[in-house]
Image 1 (cartoon, rainbow, N blue to C red):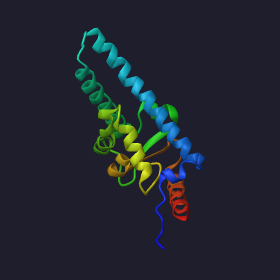
Image 2: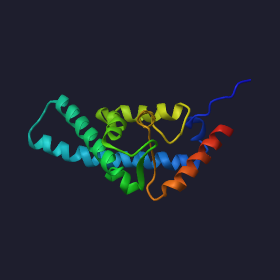
Image 3: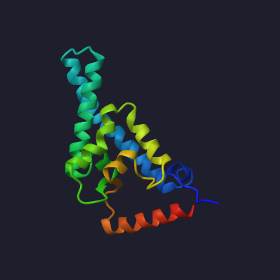
Image 4: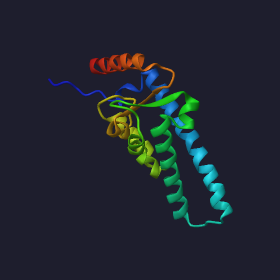
Length: 164
């Protein structure tokens, strides 16, 4: 009999810390979306832009740049800051390249981020990571947790996942 693979989808139904983590990330995404999309909508309305393609392209480009720059340079967006979250690199330092890779899904902010999250939860690995987190070698954790403490918590989470 082989070992069964445990995914985030297996854990999220009964793991309160994991539920809180994803609720905070979702709330941070909504805050960031409002901060990017509302001002952009006002500008495009003032310019009397009517083409839906312009709205789609401009909103995707601005959301991507906003997220990539904020996370690449400061390890957080204003939404993550508000919710007490921070982006960490799992290998080396957080940089603009990693910020860009993990933010690609935000170019199509209206469909890809939920899929990114679901794929991350449906596959084996750290259940706090989206697919783009795994590709970029990053993760999102509480901003107030010292890195050394977080590393111990991460090891314990991996052990718990392996046992289930």
